[in-house]
Length: 466
Image (tube, rainbow, N blue to C red; front, side, top):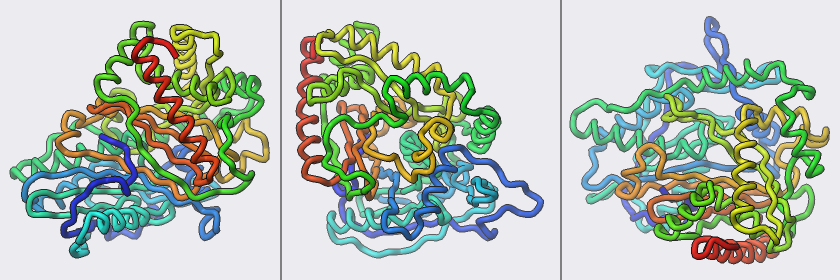
């Protein structure tokens, strides 16, 4: 799987169909006999921001989407059955949300409550027309409107491109390969006249309920916040700033640039992984070390401080479940000029271990309890924040079929005040998707940092040096 802007995807023209989720039940409120279910802190914050900014000029739009290919003539009935099976399978996709008494609650429709409605959109005559259509189609997902997933297909005689988009309220980066695998596996089964055989999935509502119960009594004096407090004290801030100039004005949001580039090809990524393992680390630690060193080379500090998403699915049934199972944690390690590769890697390894020990503290909870008062009510991060994300798609459900399915993830954010990096590894190598503010200085800074990062990774791969 490759994370790439939809504008860079190569999708052949064809006949377009859309499927939307519908229900006979009135969505938006639970039945009188059914108590409202709780939601995670991530969901409550995300929904509150969408609600508060609805109709504002500075509202931010975003989507998390995916696409894949089916070879040969498509069985449209089997495809529709697969899409319906997918929505019925995952509880979070059947949830409706409502803000009551200042907090967010939800109502989970039963699998039998949901159906699909198909719309024949008609032909798209060129690859450019398809890309433009998909970007507009993906933007239909809206935090405040149900359903929170939309799906479709571009059908051709010899192949079909299947696609979907979700609001972040019900998805995260690891949900995309789960969705691709579920739909593709179910389609193949239905096309053979069989029922799909997929792993058990967990209840996202159970996960949400446990998170709230475990943290309901947490206040600013809670000992579990010790790691966050130490991080804040050393950096003198809750949100670690991106250390290079992006040419942005305080309090302003800008249109974004979205680009994916390859940093290392398959054999190079394997070689760097071996270098990292030789000093007790892993490839993602080496990439994080390279980012920290590259920022320092470009004028940043000799201590890397940033935020990093952490997967909370575990290895049980939730490993195959759609939802927002991501916490965000602080991480810091030294990258001084006089440090050698093994030394920096040791610092990264220790920092990751420390981060994992405290990963049970929800980011939004820490934000509300520890951030300065001016920041607790912020709609977005207050300034450009240093953010690092890494995914190895080779370890996700269905990874063995990603190449054959031409599986892709498409992430988009309309406006921003900073820069974010999503590093990801697949069967072809190591790649970086970056979304940053569209300013002349940000383009210059991103280009310079990208060049330094590529050279740093090359040095690490070839000789174990920076």
